[in-house]
Image 1 (cartoon, helix red, strand yellow):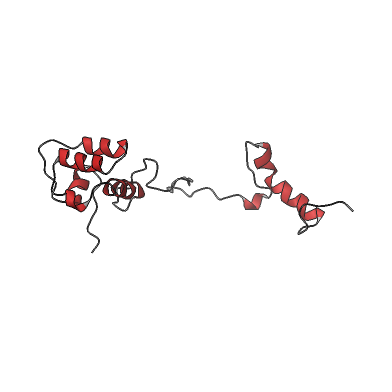
Image 2 (cartoon, one colour):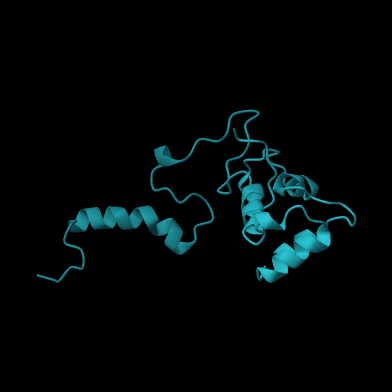
Length: 137
């Protein structure tokens, strides 16, 4: 008797499982499903093509303030700006971010702000950076 690495399956089931992933392993250009009934249905007329990238990531703008990209950018900037930094102008926000050891991405975003404008709170800052968020309550 040979020593098998996986004793949960028999040889027949092992061969069937190996057949199912053969397309992935060999780089088949077409379908990778072993059975045609396992193929995903194509989108109906007027429906978008399915992707692995969820809306709101990698530059896909949903136009919604709950967009993960907006939320992540607001959180990143906010993590380097204490509430005590407000009200502040562009230079005040940059100084507060620098004192908090903010990364260059945060400093670049804050550097795009216009001179002479004072921000009373984070919501005004988000509006100026096109990262607007609506009140939650």
